[in-house]
Image 1: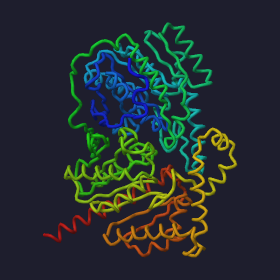
Image 2: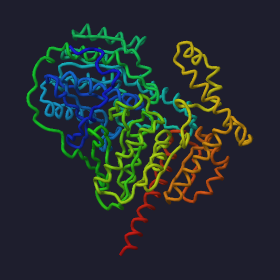
Image 3: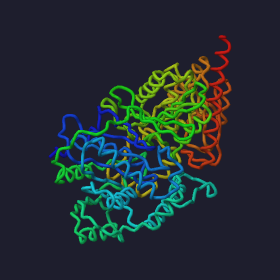
Image 4: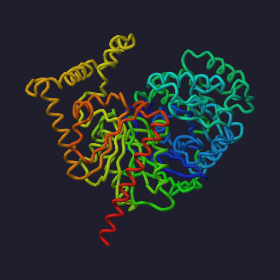
Length: 598
């Protein structure tokens, strides 16, 4: 058995990203068993949950795949049609049947890639439900792990609707801009036919024709899970049940996700206890596709790895027809993986391809499908070491020879990395940043506005977390002090000692902007009206941004009726149109320069 402390604290540091592969019109990520591990006759197919839960579990699934590889078990993960990075959009409207068909194809692909004859289906949320339902059609399934399964589809859709309203309320989205379609949440729209089919899902009515080994992680305090566990036992399944400790901390918010290490250890131990684990796999019948590309209409997308040891994973999106010689690189924000909040990066990439612009969207180290780097801190927010990842993306684009001009794009913490990267590396030709909190970082951790600090100070949950030692009081005190100085600095003399650091910082920011202006690098800044990032922007450039007039290369855009994440569809569409205009302007510069040189 593996040492159960395993790699938890290291979380895959030093690893390569998983291998992109294609089966039919679908893309996946295959993680082979480690070279120095005995090759088991088991392989794991990971089945996604839906919506925000999928965003929050992307990194969790990568870590599971890495831990399985350590004990000799290969795995495959993929996106259902109409979700995340899938290019197969329209088939999602055939409902759950097409998701089930894709699971079947993925299972066959996994057996060919791994050489294993026995599969384990592991799913969370709706992925767990599909795992149990699909197992009836897959005789090679030896075991199933159900992580917080959706038991009744109608109840699940009601829960999603409630959670969606809570998220929209928290983001301050106006009622008329909210998406109330069944299954929709945080700007993610569930395919209509899938939502309709979900209404008929009821695992309590599922006939258990086979008796697989089952691992079930129950949501604490949920009576329905306990009842379902008892039903599985009564049906004769060989069941191991455990509380899903840390479930809420995993799925509530991708920004603050916490990986349930104890549950991973239990899954590994259960996997190794299965009779088929000790069997030896046969040689693989297939290798991962050397070029893992899928195509739909005039768009081709390719799963790629790049950087040292192929440690970064991304998706290259290209037009199959005319190219204008421009490539956009789209950075991740915090722990939102490369598909972006509300699939915004996916939509942006494909709209750019429609006007002849290529793009690369990728996960920075430690985010989504890219393993972390050993020398970096665990927290990826506002870490300038991420500039190295942006540089590697630029190196990769250069190696392809597909671009004469490049545009770097980021939102929030990604905007900070984009701005600092363009400033440091003159190879970038233009930059677009959305809701940057700062242009130079001086806070400890991720700061809140003064208003938010005051609101949280009166919150009973904040008091509880203080007593539990879960709040970094030193960081909060430092950030509040800086916010107070920020608020007063406009009316203070530059020689007033507390204001000096801010005055100096503003001077540094203006030198940065002047450097880009001297270089002639176009910079587009987008703020949603009322966004907290404007607090520092006003300190640097005035309440109306009037000091930006000194920089003719900079354009400021204010979006009304949108939140920090650009959740409402009209805001995302507006951002896409602005990006297309900037990319086309870069393309025109390419054309003009070629014409000038004959």
